[in-house]
Amino acid sequence: MKDFLANIKKEDFFNTVDLHIHTDCSDGENTPQQVADACKEKGFKIIAITDHNVVAAHNQVQSDDEIQIIKSVEFDCWHGYVYMHILGYGIDVNHPELIKLYAKNKLCATNDIIRLINYRSAKAVIKAIKAAGGIAVLAHPACCWSLNLKNTVKKLITYGLDGLETNYAYRRHRSIIKFYEASDVEKIAQELNLLQTGGSDSHSVEAIIKKGEISENECNLKR
Image (spheres, rainbow, N blue to C red):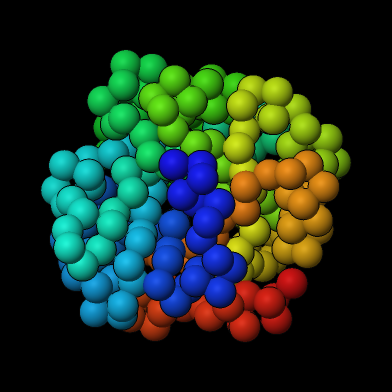
């Protein structure tokens, strides 16, 4: 999976590849099937459904001849005082170490406040993703509440972190709470030889129809 993701070209993100999409299994607006159909309509070939703390979507929709759907998840977690989201790609969704971390009810996958106070450690999340055969990636790193992002990332690497989400546009509330620029994140990924992934963080079919609300060029303009 790591080699597969590493071979995705930067220009493919937001055009034929989107590795960060949500459905109504967590805080998205549409069913997994509606999401998959919308992605096919827009010509996406590879997507990752990354619902918060749950993997129910992967029981409802599967890869087919038109589109590859990577079994994925996005965990809310903490590393000391730093709140963050860790993406797991290519996971065995039924692995017991991951099952321990899944949301116990719908609110733990949808409500921002409950997600914030439900404690998971980044160390436990990354180790569980790795145990389940997956790749661990720090989502939208510029929004991490870290005084020194590079040092935080270095520590996460000791737990098994594989990559950073660098092809990601910081818009809406994330454009306000940014602590770093996207260019800072890309530089850290390069310096630490980390995998670089990307996605729109779309929460609706409407956003997907608009190519995930972002293009590669618009992403660069946000840096």
